[in-house]
Amino acid sequence: MSEYMKILVAVDLSEDTSTIAGRALAIANNAEVHFIHVIEPLSFAYGGDIPMDFSGIQDEIQQQATQQLQRFAESQGIDAEHQHIVLGRPEVEIHAKAEELGADLIVVGSHGRYGLALLLGSTANGVLHGASCDVLAVRVGRGKK
Ligand code: AMP
Image 1 (spheres, helix red, strand yellow):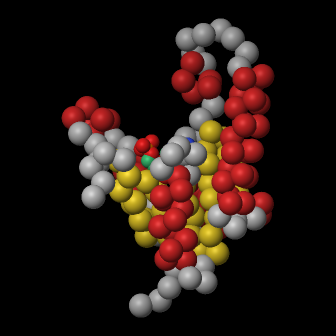
Image 2 (cartoon, rainbow, N blue to C red):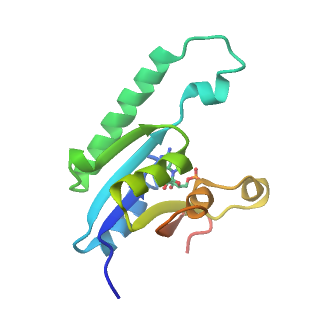
């Protein structure tokens, strides 16, 4: 079996991030590893409802996320060229970055979901559907064995 050459790890910067990255790095061998964090623009959630300029808050969120990603990535030995902060919808941007990089594996976290949360779907589901490469869903949180 051939090894993965380029792995894109989707990180939401939650407490599960080190578990997910740990799994990715454990199978990386000689693969190039990239981290991506996607920031959802506030206007996606509130744009139509609240007549307000979100740009200041958005810049602040972006700055903090960039610093957090940088700190985390460096702690895992991933340099700046392999850290990506992107604005948009997580599934869409994760697919786009995987295509752009020519990744052959995407690694995401997956929470065992129940009830309404299951019906509403998850980022892991969204990434799996429509991905043109393999996807590894690392089980995190409730339901993890
Ligand atoms: P969720 O379905 O939102 O609970 O997220 C499950 C997994 O999707 C996370 O563990 C991450 O791997 C990935 N993910 C969710 N949100 C983001 C995000 N904003 N940026 C990058 N990856 C994300």
